[in-house]
Length: 526
Image 1 (cartoon, rainbow, N blue to C red):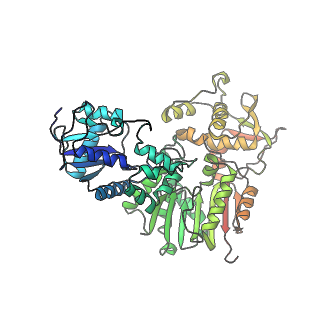
Image 2 (cartoon, rainbow, N blue to C red):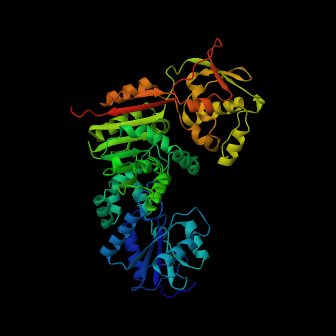
């Protein structure tokens, strides 16, 4: 390793926060008052540039990366300007863990800033041991930043992520540790509120999704394939103006809405909690998929905070959304909260059009579910699927008989969703259970590509009467078009295939309603 004065200080990190300590440390490096991890002093380098490599720049809206890259870049630039630190900012795309991470960062800097960093002219400022080792392996001298500070009696020096967690937990001390320019920018753009919302959202994972087991390619393809049918169902009730699709997925429904002549002067908004889906929707927008230019997307969770001002939305659409909210959140309580939030942002005369799956009217009724085919060996089931990847799970479920799938489902559904599926086997192919549990199984059993994800979801939480109560209690008035309905295609091609529902006396039970359409209007006058 060279001990000559470098011309660049590479400072890799996600840089969600810049602390006063970091700025003082960089000044000490420039003044020749720092030592590397080998204990060798760094010569004064007053003309050197600090290269802030902002990693995970393509990933935001999650607990791992709550602040988008453009705000992080602005934060670094603001601190650098205030402190007169000669700096470059280089965004680095989010990548999976890799032993070549250090090389990826250096290559990204060269690509975005035109600066080639070598061990001969660059020192690396880093305090993450595993990352330090990667750069050291490439021959770079390492400056340990927080790891090189004297802990003294006050304990270790707070790293930026420590300060961010203080902010998220409501500790005012974060403002003392963060650089004043960082505090000012956070408060000016309300990033502090955004960080707290993301950090404490109980329904979304650290990666910005409801579930870690969903196959998004399959999910998006299925949603898009059904978008024509879904749009034809909700379109007659849409009030032009500000039209919001909550749970917009990759924008399939809004793509159809954007072609509607009657909505040519409307603003169309897609809102989803999933980072993956919003990113795909934005990609489609960049490709010119949407005929209406006034289409906007946002990753938000309406349950955590209002997304739109009061009485500002003409139409809210929720298609195949509410059962996910109920499943991943606090059940009916979250749906009641959602209804109040939607009512608050709905303009007088506006509408909420809700389409989703529905539970049977008599959900706790005991029935017999007869499943055709070879029952297989009950002793072999259920199997613990922990650690299995999606393709392996799909092959396993596809290989089970109908009765075998129910035996497996009776374990996986309660464990994943918290719902009930208590089964008593009358014989090898006939199970006694509630009508709700029977419908949950029949609605889930064919989704083999996303079986574990589907087991997280409860399709039959609410009856139609439950929805009437929730909507009217929130203040909505139900349009005459509102109704429970039965999807006959679903009954013919999915539910009834190799399956029959009987009462305990052996009499066939009619297939119950499977879906709800609710057209809930906010009165034009109080």
